[in-house]
Image 1: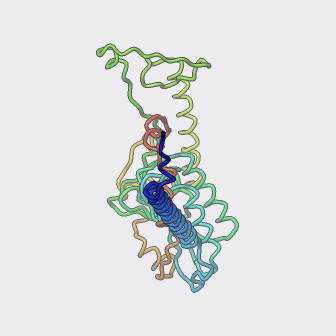
Image 2 (image 1 turned 180 degrees about the horizontal axis):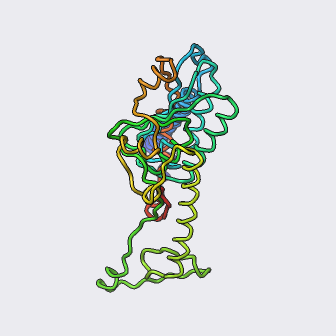
Image 3 (image 1 turned 30 degrees about the horizontal axis):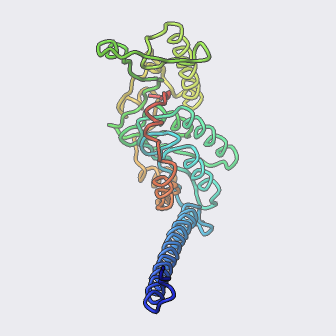
Length: 318
């Protein structure tokens, strides 16, 4: 004979208690899930608002000053597509400065060791295009360092001003890297590399040097060097006093740079605005990285960037 627990008063009470506990647990879980959903909604809404606000902050203001002033665009640090000093940022700032009716002239203040010849070329081209359209003067003011790609940009200006101790020049091109074949042999490490294409592994740091590939790379560097030389000659014209060292990659202090025709005069941002542009009011048009962009980099584009950069070989104008 068996006893059905659900048919007894005691069994029914136990079952009801279990159902109540299950219901309470289920409701608690639903409330927790709702709280988390709201939490993520609020978080992503806040991030979206920050991105929108930051984008609006980085856009040129429609109420930009129209009274006479000197327009400033800063070129600081390494010049490269992933750096603050890149063609997108600088060309955007330059367009805003040229288009402002109150800007009497544009001053590029440079303090950079150089960087990408591509980015420098894009900026140089845009400066010359905007000068032709708007008929405004551009002055370059070189501070501590105006070398390589920075000088590539500076020669687009109508005049270049330097401090007597500035470092100016370094008109050359380099491609640097490392070779690990000796260390691999010492530690018994074998390189296993498969490629489709005879030169696909060109300049691979873990493979022995290939004379033919070295010659190809050198030819490419020579071509870029000649492009750099042409830009300098076009920008400086008859003011340039060429010597055998002018395009050798050497650099000089500001005083010597003026003597060699790499620069025009000694001066600073304030002196150029006051004495040359004749407008001491200086308005900065430089595009600044905002909070939204930093968040975007932190959560998105910067993921894996370190590894990718380590694997990438780049040409630098230095």
